[in-house]
Amino acid sequence: MPINQPTPPPEIGEAFGAGIGDFMDSVPGQEVSPDLRKKSRIGIQVFTLGLSDLETCRPLIESVAVAAGWQFLIGDPPGPAFSSEVYQPGSGMPRVISLSSDKTNQETRWILGTLKHLPEVQNKDYQLQILRVPGLGIEAFWLKSSTPDQPDLVVPFHSLLAEVKTGIPDPMDDFLEKLRWLADRATPHAPDENVERE
Image (tube, rainbow, N blue to C red; front, side, top):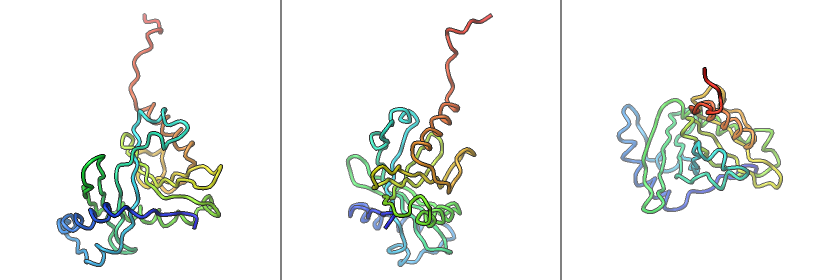
């Protein structure tokens, strides 16, 4: 199987099952069946990357990306799509911290469904994760390569920047280089003290 989808640890699944009901009951105008709550879900581990980490993550992003929890995509096409997150603190019990039901979740679910058809993943092995860069408003599926000499792939599914297109795969190195350029452009720079002023 080209894309391996890890199973959330028992404590994450238990936290999701215990907490999601209260969140779903609070979503106005949505009727969520017990069967949907229990079965129709995909859990993906989330890693975050700060802007200050973009330089220090050379060459291994694994050295700086921080495990932040698990995101669950809930629902089956063409019905409603929900997204919920279970936060996993360094110490303490994991807990559900969010639930969204907007239309972007349907696009996220659609992009997820396209991953197995990408030419880049055929006859290769990847592990499915999520990479989040809050400082740039970007979230992406991170296909972590299990094949020697095969680069990781990144497929954004949420972006606030026109330069980062959703649904388009990039090798990890190219993706990070683009993020470095965007972060540098967005960061105010102090004047060069060596520049002569009139």
